[in-house]
Length: 461
Image (cartoon, rainbow, N blue to C red; front, side, top):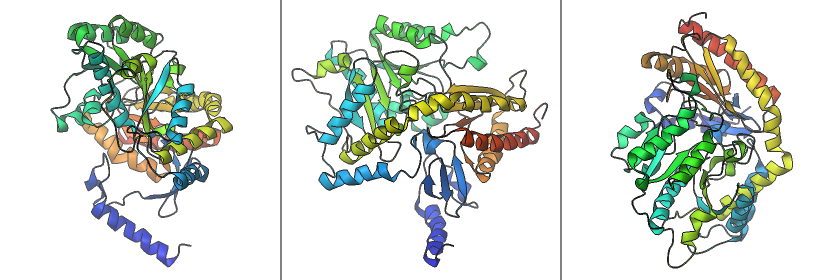
C-alpha cells in the first residue's frame, strides 16, 4: 500500500505535469480530460505507472533501452565516475572515459571507421555528420559540394540541418525555410512499389538525383539501414552495395544513420555490418548507453578524418556536453553488459520467433504487411488485404489516435501507432526480450487489432 506521502505525491504529479511539463511531439490538449501517462519504475522489459499498473515496453521507451530497465549497475558506473571527474569538456581536452569509449567504438565499427566525434544525442549526430561532410569537401578543394540526399518519409532528427534531411512534410513545414540543400529520393517500400518499378530502381534513383542536382554539388547521401518512419523499410538485396558504388563514382560521402539500428537492434553492433556495406560515417545514439545517459556520436572513416588531422585545419563544431565523462562511463558499462550477457546473440536466436509471431497476425484482415529486421518490426494496417487499400487521413486519425494508441496502452502494451506514411504499428522491444514477451505482445495485439478491424469495417473483419 502506498504511504500517505506517496499518494499525495502521485496525485500532485498529474497537476504539475499538466501545468508545467511541455511534452515532446505531443498534442497537449489530449490531456485536458485524460491523465498524463506517468511512468515511475522499470525492470527488465516492463515499466510501471504511478498507479502501480505494469506495461510491457514494446518500444524500448523510444528504440533505446536496449539492455532493459532497472539496471542499477549501468547507472552506478556513472556515479562511480562522478567521484573522480564529474565533468570536463572535450574542447581541446581529453579524459580517460571518452578516450577509452572512442577506442572501443572504433574496435566494433566496420572497416576504417576509427574516429569518434561525440554528441549529446541523435539529432546532434546527424547535424554533425552533415556539417562534417560539407567541411570535408571544402578542405579537399570541392567547396560546391554542399547538398544532401535522403529518402522520402525518413526521419533524421529535429535540428534544422537534420530536419532538412528528414523527409516528412508535416514535420518540416512548421519550421521552413530549412537549411538549404537537402533533396529526397524514394524509400525502399517494396510493399507499395508502383507498376513497372523494380527493387533496383531504389538505388538507381540516388544516381539519378545526383546527376540531376549536379555531381559537383552533392556532398553526402544519408540512409538508415532499416528506415524507421513509414514502418521499418528493409533494403532490397544488393541495395547498399549499389549505393556504395554510386557514392564512390560521384565522390559523395555515404552516411549510415544508425541512431536506432546500431547496438544490437538488428542483431549486430551496426546495421552496416548486417547488410554488409562500408559507409564513410555512422551516426549513432540511443542504444549506445541504452538511454541510461544522453549520448551520441559520429564515427568517421580515416579518409574523412585525415584532412582535419594535419596543418591548421579543424572541424569547427562541437557541443558542451559531448563526450561527457559520466555518459562515457555509462556507455562502457552498457557495452560490457552486452558482451557479458550475450545480448546480440539473444536477438539473433529469437528474431525468427519474434517474426513468426508477427507473421501469424496476417490472419487478421486489417494486417496488410509485416516487415523489419532483428527486434525492429512494423505491421502495416490496411482496409483491404487483397488490394492493399489504405485508410484515408480521417480514418487513420480515428484508427490510430481515436482507438489503437489508447487501447494498446490500456491493455498493457507500449508500442507506436504511427501514420508518417501509411498506418503502422511498430514494435522494438528491449534486446533481452524472449518468447514470454512475444506471447504477451501477440495476445494484446491480436485482441486489439481484431476489434480495430471491426470498428473500421475492414473487409472480412
